[in-house]
Image 1 (spheres, protein in one colour):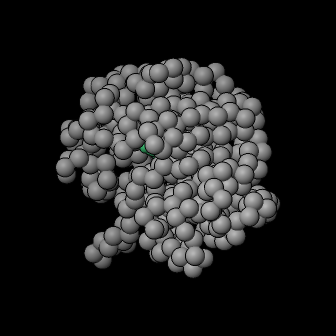
Image 2 (image 1 turned 45 degrees about the horizontal axis):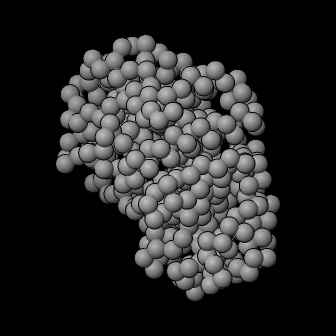
Length: 393
Ligand code: GLY
């Protein structure tokens, strides 16, 4: 078992990574809630094999908790105000109080929704994040971002889903990443999670603090990563969580004036990626439209490629950076091109509506060297268009 401390003043917590670590949740929930806690509200991803949620329920009950389980079948559409409302009604109907924990057992959609219920119900109750996807382990479960998407009417066209437009920072009391759960993930979800690891590799030298060799380590261990070798994956999760924890501890609330970019650097690939993630019909494989829509990690992979090409067009870095990124993404099996993108102006418009814009002008994270990225405000629109066009299949 590896433990990584997220030392935030007054809100310090641990990320526990290891095989079988889910068995510790109930005991720790009791320690967190103290003797007064009597209920646990568990939000479970329907993709998680039932034996994990059944044993969690039994262990919580043996610790004296009355357990209410709510299920979510995750998708960007389901990450909505309606689902948030349903969860609020369910938690309220149990008589859940401020000392009782919410427990999220699932991927990023479940963690973000359950986290926001915990952030807002009775102005905040404790949440324990139990990520069950690689993506949620290395990114979404650590750092306290919670929320849901907003579907905004778009005249006569299909309404547009804006990612994570409503939310709050609400740090978990504990994160438990059980590597055993990853065995149940299908190959596509595994690959999608690796996109966030590559993102960390692309910023590792800017983050510094001992994380500078992350990309080198991933390149050296590519075989173990691709075959999902258990000990390589545990090490991969630990290294990525450690980098994420460093960033969060330096800039918990993603402030605009954070030294060297802070938490905003974690948005590398996301402004481009979010703009295409919710477009219906985009498939990671042009020859198989049935794979549409893109998974978050696939959109981030494409977003990072677009950001790299924009950076080259703007003269911030040379094309060797693009090549290295595309090589590692292709080796992992993530897309670097996508067919069927709408017009560039439409994607630009979606990027402008992303919550990462600053005062109405675009803000992007662009590479400036190997493992180094920087924030660019109001980039030349031609360079952004070049980035978008670079990922067209
Ligand atoms: N996923 C980016 C962040 O947590 O800040």
